[in-house]
Length: 222
Image: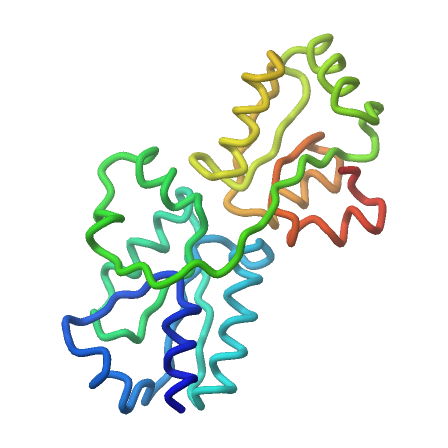
């Protein structure tokens, strides 16, 4: 099982680790279920990757790896839960790039992202995609920009939350295009997509794993 132990450390994105020898720790780890905290609701890209990883680890290592969703405040609620857990390696955290942004966006956090967790490895690189509801008449980016300039503040941009990578992407687009979109934050991709699919929001920037099925089915237009 030595290879499986090494792959375990390669796959995890963050962990609360004790100050003990990794070689000694790997001799009998894990001997009980392990939590993988995700700072977003089910259905988003971070949650999808965590569930794929947990299933693989459970099969390989013989102990349940259980995904625990702790959404809120741009994933900082989940990070705080990790930092508060015992530093024994049985609570892990899968984070997105949003964690770095949120750590600077939100004030009075109970943790220091750089010093309070141990990063292990990157898991995936995901492209972000701009999607619109089919009711949006624009078929190209220039057409969308022209429509937004003609209707300042009237086009609703949904996001997975304040201080997240998708929101920052949308804000960058607004700056570069010189348009005014009304930003509405949600507590994750799933609730934001619910309103976008229902037409209560018109545009969203989000990771491809979350959107690809809706794009292929024609429910959203990339």
